[in-house]
Image 1 (tube, helix red, strand yellow):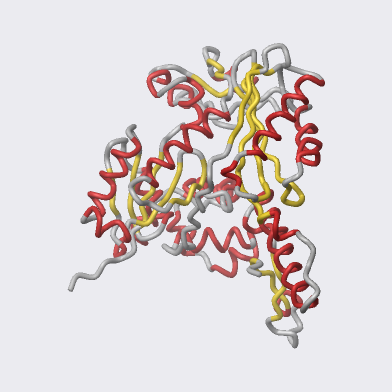
Image 2 (cartoon, rainbow, N blue to C red; image 1 turned 90 degrees about the vertical axis):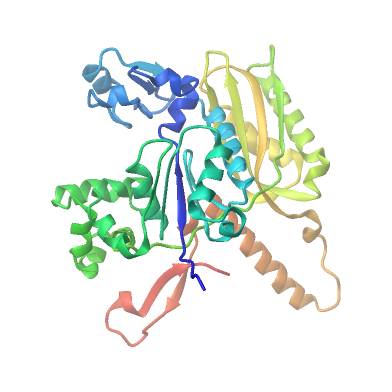
Length: 404
């Protein structure tokens, strides 16, 4: 009987944001391009093309320094709305083959191939089906962990696939540069200090004592050490929500009180959609297409999941002041739903104390979800008593991810 090992597939679309903003992969061929700084923010460029990288231009670099290194650098207006739509289409195409995705960022996703072997026969056929679903060149790699699959995907060209077996995963990771940690949000900030300390490869990081790394870098350092040693956390697959959105062309209502009235219409239309099925709205996204070119998008996390139009309009109208330029179209979409409205009704008389406790737990759970939607998975922690008799304060109580 053949035994199957766990295999994670990484899908990487390089320079995804720049490709969408520039109008396609062909627009980057031989041209030094970069995403222009967002008006009202720091004058730092976004993603850059390969031709710009040849001049030493990097993402996050100041605009003045980038133009000094590459005088012919072309600036492309950012298109966050187009990036979200294009990435959602790609994600749904991958979900169409049966994959349960973890979306790390725009252009980078993971899924496990184990459950798809019975459909497609092997990892190679599963990856081929994913390529057909995407319909565009992509770097793809497979390995026993997501980090190993990422390393494999970055090591190959588009239209090719690299598969790393479990028995040689640690040896394969040991030869990879420490800059690979930039692709994980939790470890991105460690690349620069590790480079200053002379740690160049993941193998050198794995040889360090984990306690020493933890003392110097804390929890991100422990995670980086685990990743370098071939360990990783389970995938956090997304829960697919119904896609609800409303949009309007503004015409002459591109600013001022008229823009707020258009926003009120979008809120009323969204709440009236039958697909909402009585659910509250926890997280929404307000976006606009700008007259001067490019788009703008702002993610809004409500303090409490809402289904009341007046409170939603009040919360969203404050974000309209962040528009960097007059808009020609406004769009409102649901990112995450909250609990149904019926759960907020008056409590019955019988067994009131138990129902009060249940409602409090549900409200606490919803508050944790809202906090994680705003600040990430590690935003809500709980204190666990470990060794109350210890003289070291850090050993008495530790913080762990809240799971209530």
